[in-house]
Amino acid sequence: MDKFLLKKCNKCGAIIEVINDCKCDNCGIKCCGENMIDIKSNSVDASFEKHLPQYEVVGNYIIVTVPHIMEDDHYIESIVFSSTDIVAKKNLKPHNEAKAIFPYIKNSQIYAYCNLHGLWQTTVE
Image (cartoon, rainbow, N blue to C red):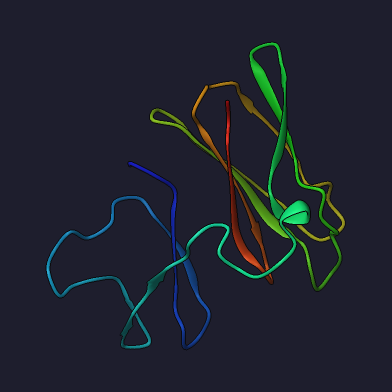
């Protein structure tokens, strides 16, 4: 797995996490009879400061927070940590704290998925 990848169906809104994407010509993962589209991080016109995952290094770990509301109809669904060797995800529900703890690995990626504004990404330095 080179990177964390989500795909979405434009018809029904289904979202899938891709472990190993198809590399064939004229192929792809289909839903509702159409190819699913890649969800690009940091591409929705929304408030960056409320969606970008933030982190603090504490010893050999990072404490990740997302300064976002966690209401019934608008919340962070998951926080994902991705490095060359590890992919870890914490699923969240409304009224949970948007917080997770992962190992500190330089150049790893942290993603937050907002149910209304999509995928947001930060690089660990």
